[in-house]
Length: 478
Image 1: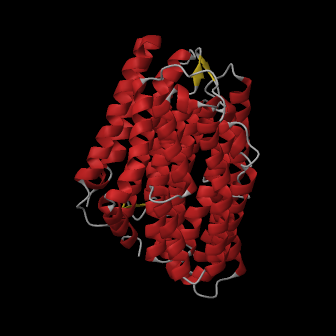
Image 2: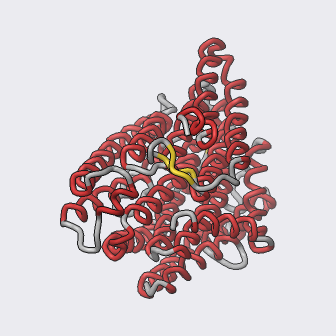
């Protein structure tokens, strides 16, 4: 198949984003400050077209394209849809916030699409070079977005911390990749899988450790989480929502692809690394969030804990484990978008507030918002019959089936501890004396909050679409 045939048949979503971002830059450059509204609307349309392109290509056979650089399979297509949905929701939630804070610049939606393009390349990466290119395209745009509010000292600090630590993680990953290339003689995941035997050289293990350390930074898994609380708190809230949703989809997906497809012969070795990351993340995410008063920092530690649960499923190293990870990602995406929609709705007299105490008595000042946010908190805590319970159930079940009983026990205990700070938010909303009521939030924010909360119950009622898609996606990796 020729280059252009592969591009049109297997890379159409990425092509749509690439052409779309060029058009958006041109429109923004010619229209100047008046271009924000038009570029923003077109950006959502471009992301929607990319979703449509993936849906239309869902019947394609799994195939490696561009000389093995990228993989077009059911796994990549499903995670790409999740990533695009996260990007679209982030843009929709950001419009009003950017306008109120005087940041309505056309570069913002352009950066979102550029980062999303990097995420999609990362998800499909089938060799070490493609992995690094996708990761850096994603990260460079995220560094700028973190410091997008240039006049805000916290945002500038968040962008600088993210950039410095991100550069360190990229260096670690490059060093690990060079070791793997040196010992395997190839950058292809399939080639590495053939070269690495059950008893690999020590250099391969070192390379794998450095590679997974770099990827753990991107998914904010402990002990590579140090950037997460400060960046989540300091970055503009819509940007934080984008970090917590779409970026996590890509990071976890490529980690699963790397360990499953490139290192099947040494599952016992990489499993030890993943188990350590999972235990550290679930415990730190559960205990460190208890004393948080800022809801964005609480969500930061919450995300660390949830990445730990996703890694519990990955540690199983089998098809059921990957299926559990995919289901977890889909449900986590919806829970996160809904939670950040609620945070964006926390505005009093035109001023954004972020303290948990500002939610006091919300059930009496805005009963509907309190109900939806409570459903999301219950789901994040893993309380049945909401979707968060099933997300944790499938990853823990995979760990038990793989004989990882201590890991499953740690996951259950960490979930019980984490329930405290989620239920604390509910307690503040329903039992504390009312704080001043929030301003009326934009329609997009209210719609995403309500849709996310309803989806948490909808999964219990009708889980078939997600389950079937996750099953097909998991099979494509094996």
